[in-house]
Image: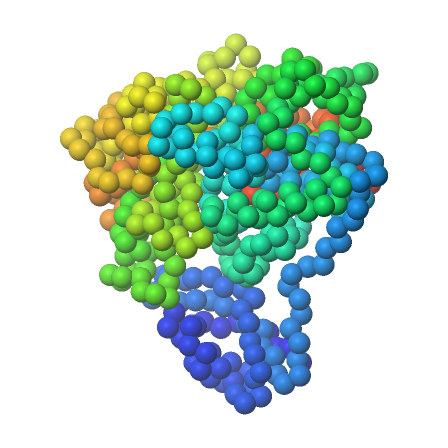
Length: 516
């Protein structure tokens, strides 16, 4: 018989088998010599009163076999099946393609960027030579922005769909089994490359298609129905159903859809800065000890406050990570964060952003649908003008930013292209700057020592989500204005991360296949 129970362990206890066995025996009343094995099926850290692990254990006695956590997937030969055209090879697009195969449909994926194998060279050129490839960068390419955004798999999404299935698929394609049990699972950028490659190979092995450097530039509509797509301006392909999974940074897609008569609407989003602290400082604040030791991971945080009627909160927090350049257009600065699987960088960074509503930026475009996009562009251009040229980002010591002082110098930062001291408190719009500054003051009351000149703010964090939504029917998930067009994921405005985007892509295909 498999027993399951919840336990609380100090870090040193959890990693000592003998102490775990004693605790299990005591709590479940099973003699230690009858316990054949145990495994963790849920784990989280509670650092409120001394650091402890809250864990759920499955315990096997002699002859017991643990249930399989990995899921059971059947990938079929779909080379002769009905096709589904998918635009984008990010989480929404690739998981839509996997669902196609499991639903006996043939996915044909078009991705504007390059494969992960080629994309890494363009990333390197951006960091070291400051050369931007507008079609292959941190935002565009196989795996989407998520490939270079750390691989955090935590989602608060309440949308329908099977989050567990997404995690099981990621494990199937190479992620550690830990993602099936951690409260806040994480893969790491260094491991996502192989996972994306494995997914692509599975799609190809099953008879699907994946085309790189293939940018959607137009739709062929007949009686308000998608009959085909135009790729790279000249190549036309017929399609029966079109899944649009283009990501939140593909601004050209929104303008193209609008010109084709596809219904769009503005939506709220958030913008702000990246803040970076020494990881050791965050560890000491969160764990309340000088050193975290070998049993604890790099500490993270999640912060949210209300300032003048708007939320100010942490976003995409990367313990043991680095700040990266996420721009997609020349003469702009955009930053994001990532970390590798070991999270062993000496820095901790997070987006700190302000909730924005359409009325906050309505004046930035004559067409209200695009006012958020135009405000994004304005702030990114402003960051470029106040930076150091090329992709060198504007930065300021955190306490100086909050107190309205110019930073005479800057500490070491993880942002590889480099930073330059800039009075960000001065040139950022007041409704952003003032809320951010007050938000940092309030965060310091919650995490004493957070507000310090050991930390630095880097601008700007502007691509948290799309400011445009492609309107779709709540049940069929089709565009309200164009039939057999299925907008999904972050780019369509219906998701906010790897897991929720993947779920959205899979749910769309289930509707195409008539499974829902």
